[in-house]
Amino acid sequence: MTAQAAEKAPRTAPAAPVRDKGRAGTWVRLVLLLLFVLVFLIPVYVLLVTSFKPLTEADPTQAWNLPKVWTTEAWSVAWEKLEPGIVNSFLLAVPGSLISAALGALNGYVLSKWRFPGADVLFTLFLFGMFIPYQGVMIPLVQLMVNVGDTLGVQLYGGIPGLVLAHVVYGIPICTLIFRNYYVTIPDELIEASRVDGAGMLRTLWSIVLPVSGPAFAVVIIWQFTSMWNDFLFAVFLTGPSSWPTTVMLNNIAGAVTTPYSQQMAAAILASIPTMVIYVLLGRFFMRGLMAGALKG
Picture 1 (cartoon, one colour):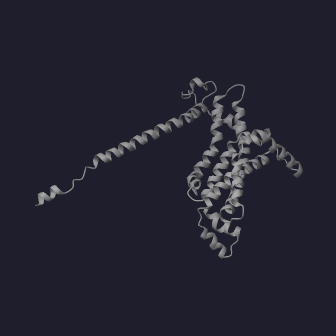
Picture 2 (cartoon, one colour; picture 1 turned 120 degrees about the vertical axis):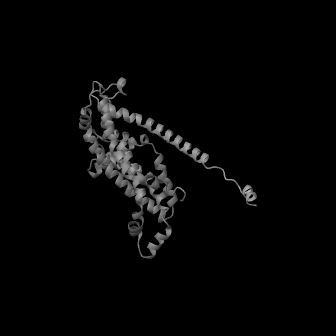
Picture 3 (cartoon, one colour; picture 1 turned 180 degrees about the horizontal axis):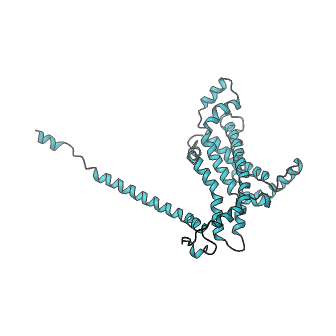
């Protein structure tokens, strides 16, 4: 009787082949990811290797070769040439990204939690600003800055303040969109409860909304800081030589009569370090804040 029961009992398939198949798939994915990483790092390798070569070795035919003589001369020269531009870029990107984040938070908060007649139409008009190309507003923007600067007695055109203003205004649509999509995920019950307790609009923003807005601020600061730091068109069009940011300075190094490849590579690395630091510090909040509100609102 026991033998018959054993024969009728269901037989389980061995799990070893399934585990082996899963391990094989994992190894294939790891190998593919490693290949993608190597391909991505090839330009970084060329940049680093070339930046430590003397000018006599910095040649396209020797781009893959390690330096025969390691030197930091190119880094010293690149820093000397880029230092004024890096300072100007910080004067542009730091206040510009913070102002953009503050304005975006106010706009997103009002458009998502304090509804008023025509809010949807206004938000749609905000979004249209994202699709206006830079080239289409350059001449009117210059004329506006000159006229406003003459009226107020301040220098907007040709300096950093005017460049900050241009980027802040141009960044309002995307900053508003990010904060609005994030704030629609905050339960309306919290806002209603604060109203019942007697809190007004600004008090609710300060006590309820801003403390949970870290991911949205991270997204906007990364977005605006990177956009301002890497901007070339506004920078070369709206500023003078004394206010040129890093991108314009970097272009001047690349556009020299002779081609100092090692200095160009070192300068390119120096120019990219601040944005990489921002991504490292705030990157873990980036996708969380960017995807907030994707399924709601």
